[in-house]
Each structure stands twice: as structure tokens, then as C-alpha cells.
Amino acid sequence: QVQLVESGGGLVQAGDSRRLSCAASGRTFSTYAMGWFRQAPGKEREFVTAINWSGDSTDYADSVKGRFTISRDNGKNTVYLQMTSLKPEDTAVYYCAAGYDYGGPYYRATAYQRWGQGTQVTVSL
Image (tube, rainbow, N blue to C red; front, side, top):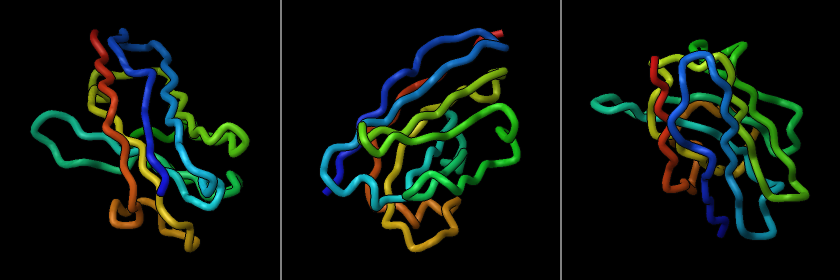
């Protein structure tokens, strides 16, 4: 089964950009839909963005649309989350998730079977 490891989190200032990566083990990465979720302190985990197995279909939460971009490189077994114009409300632990691609919807956490350990992103004023 695929295992996921996120990286790229850290402390940034409002307005900065940051790229998160999620490296997957296993030979079946290209068959999975991939998603990014986040959880802020005291809040429930929420959907951020997702990409289908081939990379030609994406979905974004309204709160990040136009600022965040998801992409994947199936040759490198990696999915990326490019974050721009970061805001303090983007502060959260960001989780990468993998799910068998049945065509969506991808915004539901229940669509994903494998989760990474998370990486903290903190946005200061």
C-alpha cells in the first residue's frame, strides 16, 4: 500500500509563497487520486484541494481558489501544493491523502484510504 510523507511546511509571513510536497511510496501511485486537507487548532479537518490520477482534473476549496495550485508528477510519485498569497487563516497542519480514483467527488475525506503524518504551516502577520 502507498505510504505518504509530507514536507515543506514551516513559518512564513503573510503574502509569502510556500510549496508543500508529498512523496508516495509504492508502484501504484499513478492510480490514486490525491488530496490535501488541513486542520487548524480547535477546528475540524477541512478539504483544501485534490487532483485525479492523471492530473487533468482538480478541485479547490473556495477559500484557496486562485491562491493554491495542486499538481502531481507520477514519474516521481509526488504531489505538490503550491501556496501563494498566504494568510494567517491558512495556518494549519496540512495532510496529504491518497484514495482509489473512482472519478470523484474528491472533497470528501472518506474518499481517501491513506494519509500522511502532516506538516505544519504557520503564517504570521
